[in-house]
Length: 284
Image 1 (spheres, rainbow, N blue to C red):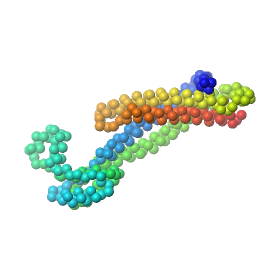
Image 2 (image 1 turned 180 degrees about the vertical axis):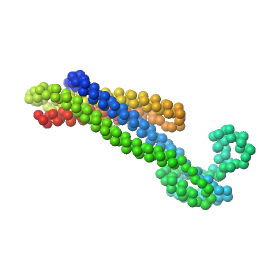
Image 3 (image 1 turned 90 degrees about the vertical axis):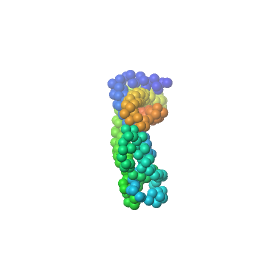
Image 4 (image 1 turned 90 degrees about the horizontal axis):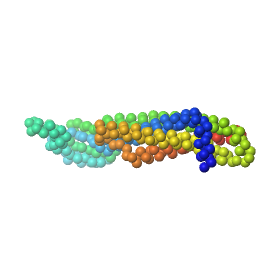
């Protein structure tokens, strides 16, 4: 209790540096939490698109369907292949767009028979599509891989950008904690020297400074998680109102991410305080 009480007292002694450290940590952890949720959500979207990714091969009239099915089923990348007749395709089109129900009786069915493939390896979609185009009886191939590939590229670039940004923010927070604790140490130099002379251990002396750093960063982390969670929820509800099929993170996911941020906040606070107080103890 002595260490916690002294840590709080030192925060009150230096309100300006303490507030500077608090708000630096708040901005860092809020960005870390919010961007982490967005990145995780983007990964969920990509995973969903990859699971639903389908390659469609449109067949020419008179194509040997059995031979095509037999060959394609032997490809290692293909998990499932099925034939969708042109009648089934038209029925599905009418189901999706009911206003076409009357028009379908006025004109001949223009849709071709189609082979629909689900892949085991979504990364091989482009190669499979190119191979399908070369098969006899295949008139054309379509797949939604372009969007998925672009999202994967965005995801990779976002991971790299976030890694750099988070690294800079955390370093900024770490050195901000060090500066604040260093100021606390400087203001108590005489008292600390006396404590060392009367036999106080280094661990006993460092305790209040460690708690000072942890209290500053952990309180900032708690507020950052609350604000970031509210912002994410508001944004997720707005997006789902426009695109209800997109997945969003659940409440347990938010708590899990928040727990990681709070753990990181405690480690940074304790680490910065330990580094600053240890530097002083080395000098004396």
